[in-house]
Length: 344
Image (cartoon, rainbow, N blue to C red; front, side, top):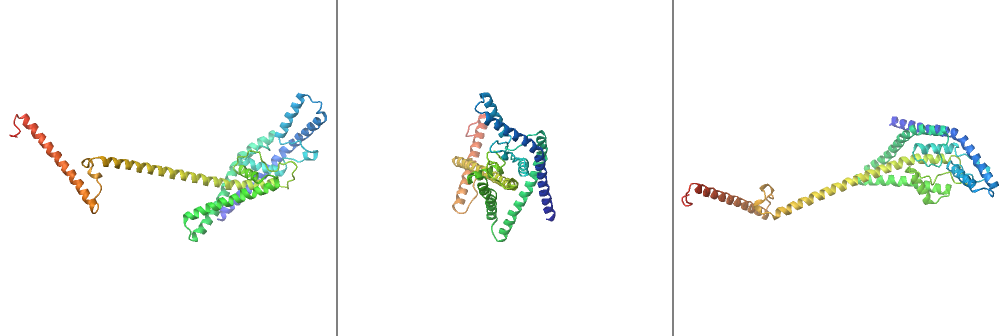
């Protein structure tokens, strides 16, 4: 038990150290390039405001293209120069980006643009994604252990196993939905200014690693976020991924079991239908053509008498067949010897 806890602690510590190192490297590689892009965007905006009445169509098209590229690179030329000093690659945002890389969410709103940052991202993801899978597997085991302890407690109280399985699954679903979907959505509603339904939508799209990128935390212009806000969101994502991975595994198991039950029922229905057709055909046959081994076993009372009668009819039929066969043999013999039937 102590060895397992020590392994879990070391794995968790190593995982978070890996994310911290990655965040520091991304920050160092991308922050300078981002400042240059923001400075260029500010100059572009200033030039546009000074000469927008004299711009040609080609110059306007070039301005729009530059503006789109700046937005795609995470630079929003909105507001005054003080807002340009706020970096998308501070430590909080860098840690959040590192978490989205190893969890394969990939919103797309923040990404490395320098050659060094892109090459480092490849190797960081190459080793980080397997580490993330191992970490989530360990967290999933801890959650499963809690459910097993709850089931054991209920079993000691005299509850049936089927009811225990249903209650533990219900507890797992209700607790996970409350902790990882409902409560965070209230937090996002207050912090981001989203509606509650938008918070639920963002939470599920994020934890399921779909990651459309249409809603991302910490990106609302004009809003003040507290320090390490995105770090807390990244931690919520990591533990939420473990919960939803277990949930998907449970749902997959339920669907597979349901499929097996349906197939088994269909096979039984087909077998019963086939047996019924066979019995209907036997009822239409004369008794003497029913094999003796397929005759129903004798039962008490009237059923036994019916069975004896059927057996007797079958024996009489056999005797009649034998008499007919003997008579035919005698007739053939007499014909070959040119004798009359009477002499025979």
